Image (cartoon, rainbow, N blue to C red; front, side, top):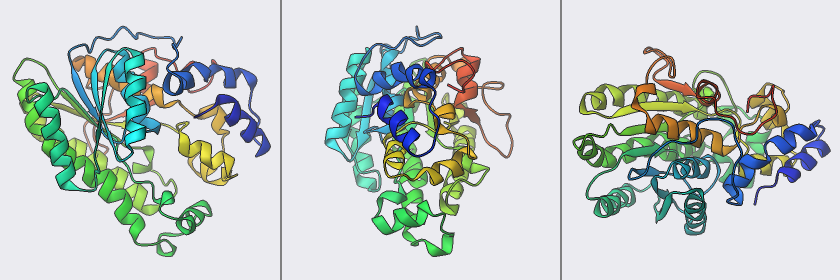
Amino acid sequence: SLSVASFGDVGEQQGFSVPASRRVGLQTAFLAVTACSPVNAIGDLSLNLKGRTACVTGGSRGIGRGIAVGLGEAGATVFITGRSQEGIAKTAEYVNAAGGRGIPIQCDHAVDSSVKQLFEDIGAQTGGTLDILVNNAFQDPSLRDAKTDALLSRGAKFFELPLDVWDDVHRVGLRSAYTASYFAAPLMIKSSSTGQRPFLCVTSAPAAVTYYFATAYGVSKAAEDRLIRDLNVELAPLGIDCVSFWPGVVYTETVKRLYETGDVARLERVTGGLDPNDVCESPLLTGRVIARFAADPSVRKVPYISPEGLAGRICVVAEGAKAFNLRDGGFPGTTA
């Protein structure tokens, strides 16, 4: 499990200065996702998603787990998908503890038939409707094998990486978002006909407009933003709103692994050399911002998202949290 203390201790070993106030400040947000403890965060958490259904793809860990818990806090029934039965079952427990209802459904988002079956199963349990879809499934290319991980760590150029890196982030990331949206659309359209205004979103990243760590990754994120923009053109007239979310650097199991293996250089390429302990968000912050968007259709527009244009329909999670007066429990003066 994640540990605030372990982040701080390892960070200090790798040369980062970790203020005690920051370490304590993030503790409540970590506990909410990893130990089902109450969270004393500032902001309006009295959102009401009771009676609403949501599907979070790639919810076995990391940001997906935080999103599922954030929706659960608001009372939603959350279908959690992923390949790891153990992981999605644990997330479901956290959703239940947060006040929602978690339902794990094993799904390989690289396999169309598996995704089709997923939404058939959801429809069978909801009367053929779905109110919220969060496309979060992602295949991390650094987990492919030790060699690829090492290449990414040293900042290898695209022509030095296996071609499979492109397939990883586009098959489970971009294409999986398209596929899940495809099979979820009929359920969401039916939900819209009942007077709801369903919400479809994707977790993207600033890598859509600035270089992070691999060409294939940035291209996939830019494409996800464009996917959301064009889906909104087609779905908004049917009563379904679409938004792309940009979390910042998030404390996840992957970040913990980078600390523990001493791979601070990869983090610094994302943070611009800033101490991740000062700028990281918890997975729960993204969940709370998405829950606000899901509960209140009136915020699915400027200034809470970017203006229509080349950049798509984007909400930067930190900016959304500020607008909604939500905090991670972080120390004043920090992003969270």
